[in-house]
Length: 159
Image (cartoon, helix red, strand yellow):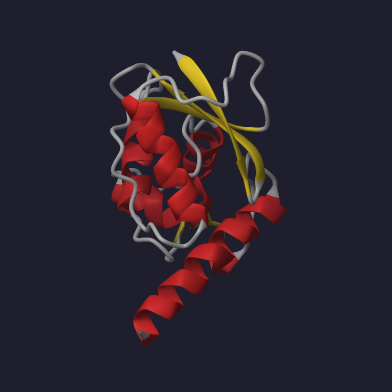
């Protein structure tokens, strides 16, 4: 696994690739990260992340491989990728979608363990009643990501 460091509007963000897919992401620097993408998959991920933050990309297409996680966590992470850009679901809604309606808290734990934030958009999952709760990058960053997507979605709807 090789890490690439990006300086994005949200600060330093690192993305890990294994040669075939993105397999990790991290808010902040990673000691072994290079600013030069380690191969074509890393270069594609970097380009897509830059386009996403510029409001030019609404769906990541770079292959993703999640290296760990329970079956439940993997189901939650898959469901995250199905939440449309600019939209949100609650933890309870995601729990129902993965077949365990009483598992809203477990969905929160899976969000916290998401190894590929932003690309696997855990920021699109919110608390009941629209409350913003929990995010590995901090709630301020969650708000920025949701505002970015809402603004782009609104702009696209009115174009």
